[in-house]
Image (cartoon, rainbow, N blue to C red):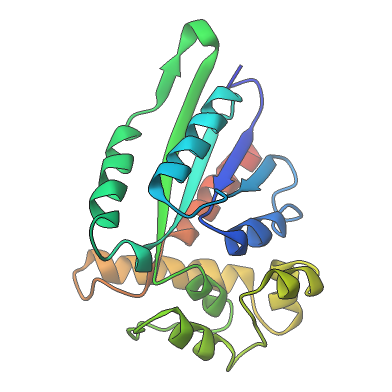
Length: 204
């Protein structure tokens, strides 16, 4: 049954999120974090993964979304429809299923949260490449599976090289505070809020 275990399925849109959240298992030891991602990066594939997670009995499904691919149609509308579909918890008592599906966005992409390990920024980035170039001013980073494996855990790699997880969370929260006060609509991460959700699961 969905509520018999504190389990979080984290769905990213590619291997970056998979390897990063896999590296956080040492931070959140009391819960089961299972990162996964669709084989094809499309909203439809993501929806199939969500439905698979619900059927498997996960109590929480956290979808990690890169907003740089949601700026244009038809992806923008498809994404909004997906969020609306799971706005309320999935509750199927006869099947023993109760699941919260939540979405956590980063603009432009997950690498912004990696940069927040080292420093805060609110500058606009034209594309992922510009953001990754900026990240490389603080730590060597490549968006490749080979790199993710060789660094032996992205989280610990960033901290070994002078970054701080707690700093990243604080910086992510700052970005959301600025978004909500209306100062800008770009360069933000909801990862701080996701980490708080995971922390609450850990304490339950």
